[in-house]
Image (cartoon, rainbow, N blue to C red; front, side, top):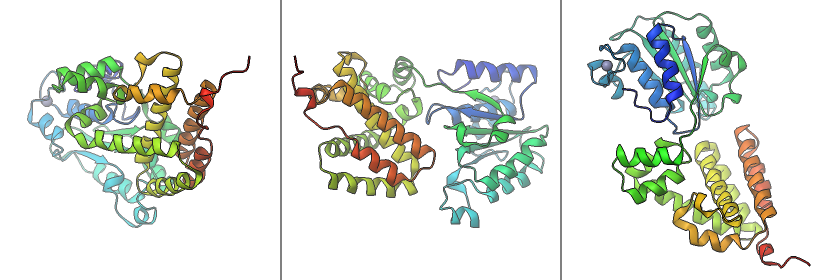
Length: 346
Ligand SMILES: [Zn+2]
């Protein structure tokens, strides 16, 4: 009854550890956003507290209470539920010392309604230095009926001391076919919509399911993509205005800026595919006509270089570089249109 789709390797590792009673006291689930990390963590919490023989059953009171986020022994800690002075002063961009202290207090008490307390840290890369040090102390002195599950999209931002005390489990992106099949069979999504969403999802089923249930996500994607295409053909003034907007958003919501860059990356990768006559593999299948038209504007080298530049900007943002600077450099490197149409010299 594991709910996670397409993560056979991770599930079999956890199931084997459950069956043999050799679970680690702390896991680090690594994988892109919306790939199933939280679903797997909650499934593990269910398995540890399930009342049935085949765990997790998904049906017993305990499993249902965990799925409904009502179980007293399962706590999810992330950026949104932070409080206290240090969270305020850091603009809530870190998991605070206070949040970890609260976990430590809770961990010192016996389970309230289940067998095992499970603490899930979503976005573990956002632990403040102080919070990571506090957490380290707890991880160094494991107790029997407590499990920590840390979720991260980027383990390189976590202190090595934390990583070394957790068992690492990697969740790989799903194939387009797996996402498409799951959308149709499990979520009853219309096949044509499932075809588009499975490509846009980049292997992250959670995003595809959200977009299938909420048209707003696809509308936002259209809006962002149109803005990006507009910027591509605009002058420096407009580009830098857009940078100010994006950089401002970055301090509020890092993920949304990363998602904007991902959209742009997908678009330029599609241009590359069209250019080398592999249009079958493109992601933005609803815009194939526009892609075919734009691909003619650039040379292959221009497209490749700009893809590298988008990747570099994304990496710099992940490494906490100055967002305005990183985005300005990217805007300056937008290739000049029309080069693809110039005949090659003989
Ligand atoms: Zn159960």
